[in-house]
Image (tube, rainbow, N blue to C red; front, top):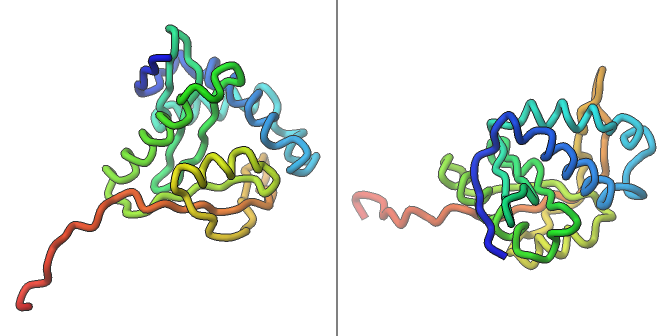
Amino acid sequence: MPVTLRPARDEDATTVATIWESAWRDGHLGHVTDELVAIRTPQDFRSRAAAMTARTTVASADGAIAGFVTIAGDEVEQVFVDAASRGSGIADALLTAAEQQIAAAGHQTAWLAVVAGNTRARRFYERRGWTDDGAFDYAAQRPGGTINVPCHRYVKRVAADSGRVAAGG
């Protein structure tokens, strides 16, 4: 299936939110607290998707948005694909784009957080050359504070060494 990547536009936020909510539930229910599930409402996904448009790349297949990736500095903050498009190469294309964007911004290493129990996502990242850097608590934002979510931090070197030789040697 041919995949087209492009920067997200404001009008994409509703579709991104719909994909995000569904895929987030697939990967997180049973692995995060009920408190976090309760605040991840459709409105929460819509408002968060609208706020991150400038940092989001969408993937289209057959003319419809099928997934997205969002970066924040050196973090691959979100990467989700519509259930019907999983296994089609869209996640690979999105993750490659994120790695390239992070490298182009001058970062040597990228990182992302995966909920500890999401073994499907963890296997995907490992197949893509990401390394589990250990368990940590990810601070998920909520009104009035944060909720600590048990995750694993995955890292990957995204920029090649410059190959420069020190002067005077």
